[in-house]
Length: 299
Image 1 (tube, rainbow, N blue to C red):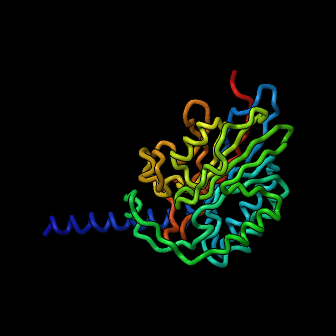
Image 2 (spheres, rainbow, N blue to C red):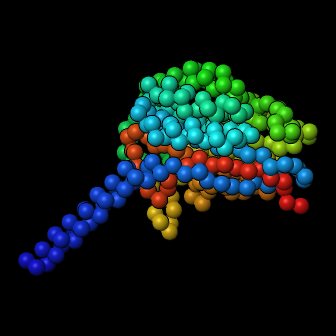
Image 3 (cartoon, rainbow, N blue to C red):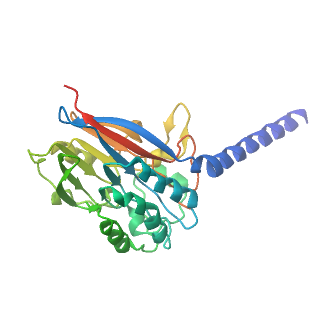
């Protein structure tokens, strides 16, 4: 009897701890929006720093006013450039909330690519399927992606979905290119392929999912920097171990943050600001945006 009673007590403690962890992950950490700071040495010698705000994976749903206010407040940073790397919509009726959130940031130049949750609404999934790299993609109902594109381009931001452009920003010649979502095989790197123009002072690539095949292409063409999202930083991490899965081909070490890729390219993977409405938890992986300060390369 004593042994059975002890097992029951231990089981009760385990269930209680699990409930507390779930409450923490779903009610507290999921809304602890955090601004990360990184210095990225990609500019020519003697250049003034360039402030680049990277936003990803809003997964906006109606009623998420705290997230909307926090992201909109980032306009006070007065970034020189905003990079938006997809999965903005988490609900068919979220478009107006995304527009309201991003409108203050339209005062800065920006560029964007899309993720799968700009095209299709999220659907319920067994979380253990994320450990299966060969699982089939599930498509929800279509989302108003063309209306989203219109809002972003009307705000003056550059559509880089399988497109490239050359711009003069912050006194520098910038070459920017992007691909549509590699996670759903919407990317067409051939549309932007080719060496970075020699006259470019800095080159920037965008992709929603940091798939190694796409990153290798950018690196081979001589890009200085690539921004991506999609991973949610693992979303549920183990302290001291990190992410359990990345939901793409990238390794766990580079599931979020600033890392090198190849010999000369920097990669920033954002852990993003949202989650699927069907898995509204984050553990040891707070939602984030990043302010990347481009600085001169080290000699």
